[in-house]
Length: 233
Image (tube, rainbow, N blue to C red):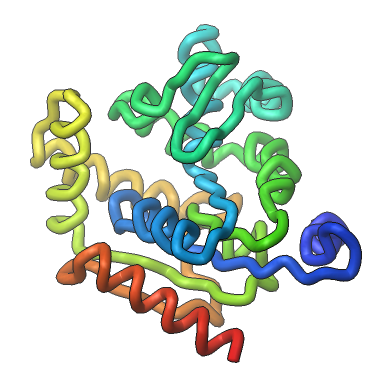
């Protein structure tokens, strides 16, 4: 992996590709913050969680058991997906909203715990690292995929705040939701993500910690940009 990352840092020759990683649990705000930071800087965006959701969706549609690690890893390695802005396509179909459904989210949390699946997606994630720079959001961006990133941020928020955000996201997209069920699911996902053997959810030792419980998206974006400017100074 180190050699691949070295190639990423020197993409296009000797030019360094700046990388900002934004990790954190579900509904911490990392996706929206990452999108806006990338837009502000004119950087590419990697939503690594979408990749695991795509694997989960492909598995569910193909009747693959969520504990069939070998089959899911094979799906991940040959995943026919592409990203266009914030739109996500699977085999030519726009599944941007489909992958955000709760059943796909729950399945992706299980799929993401499988080491072979994670390994199958490493190089695909590294290929997002291109000039003029990359903002990568996920759970192991700063600890595993881009350990030498220019800036590492770990976002968190109270489970109450996160459940409220997730509820609003689902309702806005036309999905039914129960906030008590969402809170329980978030707590279960946190435990599963932080306790898994492969790339557990945790802040990198040199990551900046940002609690977004009482912050607006704009305040979160402003803080990340300030940290990035300081890191580049």
